[in-house]
Length: 367
Image (cartoon, rainbow, N blue to C red; front, side, top):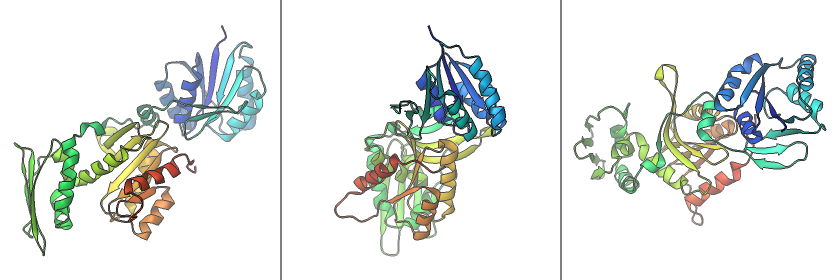
């Protein structure tokens, strides 16, 4: 029986390397890496169950590269079924391996694109690769260990959103001041503002009593649901409203809220409001009722690149329309943007959002 050997070039983007290995399903894997990408190679090795040989190559010296490739070629048995993934690594590696092995029997040369599609460079066929959200986070060195599954929220949780939005309209400024907290894990202390507005929490009944006073009128409401503590504070209610809309999109395979990526010392690196698994890539969603600081867009875009890799998509969803400066900032960072207050009498906000996402979904992100 012929041995199946797989060679993959390792660069900064580890996901296509992993997807290629799973697709090839070999007996042995050779990971070609440089001194700068040894860490990435080790992450890939930890994710697979195949025998792995790590080989360090000079990233650019063609003569040194071909010398090492010649050594590999000489040690490959004629009966060996060889596959080579040229998706990552340096361009000199990819060109050298292609020129050395193209046209040889029992050799498959392929490339994995940002949509987890595997393209055979010999016969030009394509295949759908596997996608694993949690494996992808680990491959980029950021395992996701803290989040809230969308299905943890109940019908009563979703029903309370309209009630929250109704009282918020009375005085959005006071609502923000009352519901803003530094740490959701701490015990909420009742808040009273000079305006007369207040927010009280009854832990025994898991109920908030809110009273808002504006210059024109007052409004009070009793707010209770299984997860009201998390929903009302820090505008999580809006994130949940966005998640409910997004969950109706047919592309969604998994939906996670309040995704926290830990760092060394167990300190939180960053929190992503919503991450959606689309079955072949990730969609990162930032939710804001209003955007006050455009640098938040830069921070969001940076987090997406760090946690999701080059292939992931991102969108900023707001309740109020974005100002021109914020729109320009989104475009500069490759972040889609959408407001629920976009007026259109013919198309619902939900359909407009899905149309936007569909139009951008398969587009390749610039490197």
